Length: 276
Ligand code: SF4
Image (cartoon, rainbow, N blue to C red; front, top):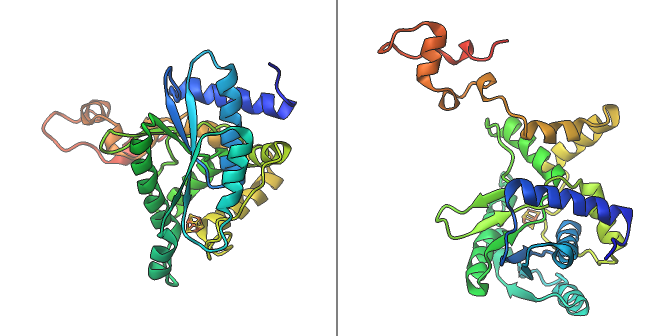
């Protein structure tokens, strides 16, 4: 079975690389795809379906859509498309939109709360459906934007995991599009004739949101220095812990030995690490 285009072949290669690198999909998995109807989740669903038909491992897919309850939301498009393509799916109607309306104020950062609420719904449905993995459509741009958001606004050096086991150990969240650029996901969704629907949330696309601002900064940087985003993504897999200032990453005994401090005395301050 050949790929429909060079774009699909490239995305399949990238997703396969991620699946292998992080053990994202294994024999017998039932993979539940979070399908919002945005370009990224459509691209993920279609690509995983392509891989499923070709993969040496046997796994199944089920799409799950969490409807936040906004009146204009086109969940009918999700249902129609999944039926037409023979994809198993479930639409879960919720009142997340009402909850968000209640908490929104000028200083609120609604997206993190919204994501947590939606994640809770996905976990519940995953248990209902017997899903062994929950696949989300975050792509390479999401990873580097999150890295910068945490760096600039949260004082933390982290992006997001390609594979995450939930705190209670009951769910595994996977992000097979980690190496796929946002532009590629957009183009692939278009190529596959999938109708993108908006989430209808009042803050969706709000350019004052920090994530949107970071996206614009990266766009400008990329124009000026092509390859910046790929370099940032590569950096996430090329960490030098000893050149950071987190003493949890640097065994105190080693720090003491390196600085010639006898056991029993306090470890040296972090600026003695990785100053080269
Ligand atoms: S834009 Fe709206 S729907 Fe999207 S994560 Fe933020 S609050 Fe949720």
